[in-house]
Every structure is written in C-alpha cells, then in structure tokens.
Length: 267
View 1 (spheres, helix red, strand yellow):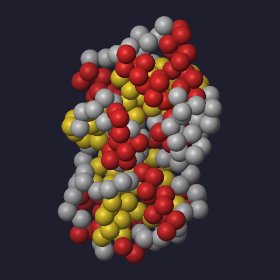
View 2 (cartoon, rainbow, N blue to C red):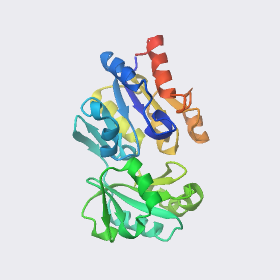
View 3 (cartoon, rainbow, N blue to C red):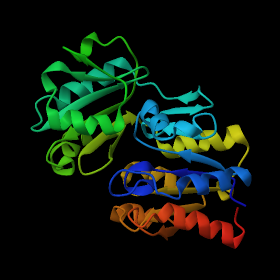
View 4 (spheres, rainbow, N blue to C red):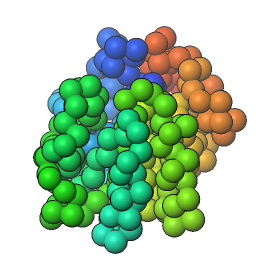
C-alpha cells in the first residue's frame, strides 16, 4: 500500500498555467481520509510552496529547494547547508555568463544582486521565491545557502549555464532543473536524499512511496521510490529512470494516476 506521495510542482502537478488542477482539493481530502501523506517536492522555496497550499500548511510534508529543506507542520526537520567558500566559488564562476541571473538561496531569503533586477527575471523569480532580498554583493549576505540557482532569460540554460558549472560536479550536485534554470547543491543533496531521510523518519519503505516528476532535478527521486512516475511531458532521461509513466501535467496526470491508485486499491 502507498503511504506517501511525493510530487514535483512545475511541469508535473501544476498545469500549463502554473495552477493546481481543479480537482486537487477533492483528491487531497480523500488522501487524508485514507491516511496517505502528500508531499510537494520542488525546487521552489518553502515559503512559495506554502503559499500554493495555504489550507495544507500543517497537513502536507514539504520538500523545498530540491530537497535541501524539509518542513512538516511548520517545523524544519531536515536541511543541507552548503559551505560558504564553495558557494562563493560557484557564484564567481557564474558571474559573466551571458543572460545568466544568480540566486543565493538562503535559509531565510532568496538573495539577488541589485544590478540584476531585470523585470523578466524578477517575474520568473516570483514563481519560485516569495521571500527575496536584494544585495549589492553576495559576499555581504549573512545567511547560509541551501542551494544556488541560475536563470537563463532566453531558456538556454542547458547550453550556456550548465557547461560552465558542470566542472563543479566532482564536489557538488549540478542539475538542469528546466530550460531556464540550473541548480547547485551539496553533492549528496537531492530530492531523493531527502525522501530517503523521510522514509527513515516516518518508518515507510520505498515500496510504500510514489513520486511524480518531469526534469533532471527529479532524477534521484525516481530512484528513491518504487512507484516512480515520469510525466508524458518529461525530459527523456527522466522517462528512462522512472518505472512508470503518467499523463502530462496539462492533462492533470498526477491526479489521474492517484485516482487510479484508489480504484486499484493501492491506497
């Protein structure tokens, strides 16, 4: 029986307009009635996630910032903090990449440079970060980073940002999160690592967990559970890692699959 369902947000649970499916509340109530824990697992900031689920702040398990921050009932129960020296090394390497905007993802805020307050970047940042702060230099930030994120305003992160940061892969986790974003975290940090920690904490096994994802920051998540689902619209490499496939996010594939779980007695 499935006891925990982990789901990515963008390109997975959310539709093409970035909204929750109309049937989400009905499904969420039924999951709760059946004592199944729902867990949004996203690259988004925790404060962005709870804004998306105001009714469920104390009812869902939240895996934020690609699993580097996990919160339950308003309490931070797991986090993976990056070392300051390597943080600034990566930020320096990204400085000067054309069309690249950097985000220092701290425990308290998402920090951006004052000089990089481009309107299009800020609009996209707002989707993922609700608590932000501008700084003249990242060296002035008095916070610890859980993640570094880099945005390409032309959707060419795979060819422009990723190759420049890939050399850090021997020490850090460098992942293509979407066409626009590249994320950098500790080497052992990922949604999959966070899920393994939660499985230990909540006493559930991989066979009692399901996960839905669409991009490379979901790769480890696909390997941490038995019921791993790649969306129809998923990045090809993610489809290869998943055991199963789900209809696209536009077709509300997560909801469709959960309803199938219910009909088949898996939850």
